[in-house]
Amino acid sequence: MRKVIFPGTFDPFHYGHLDIARRAAKLFDLVVVAVYDKPSKSLLFEPEVRIELTRQAVAGLEGIEVVGYSGMTVAYAKKIGAQAIVRGLRVFSDFEYEFRIALANRRLDKEIDTIALITGEENTFLSSSTVREIASLGGDVSSMVPPNVNKALKERYAAGSQAGFHRC
Image: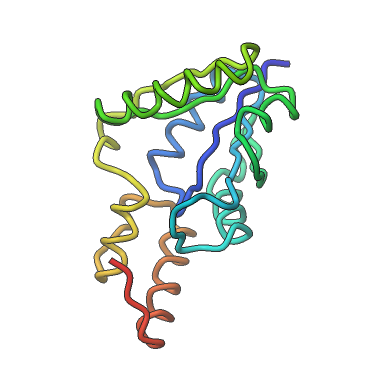
């Protein structure tokens, strides 16, 4: 079985992520969308919420499963028997960052390759931080995220604003 891991924080999962997952599923038997639990950046949603939102967003898509993980991505890929790590690239600066990470992962485990998929043109502007910022300011992100994620963002920011929560 050809298996690939598609790791990320997915905070939140958006249509750019969905595009990469769907396209990777055409190339591999199984795409494991792996939601990282403890990145060094500040998160809007807890790991369990991000996992569930991502599961709902890919529900019904063949060859895609969602899991949570912690630790080094390359070690988790090896643990689940993935042959590669798939990453999405939007702009040139993404390439530079992903290139360095791919080289480090290759140093750690020569058996795990990194495959980069170029995002669809309609998703080049999309990032989770952009989605969060627009949503936090009351903007409409319904064209950027699946409906379940849009609902969760609205609820999160409505609850936050009532409690004096502001995130920009």
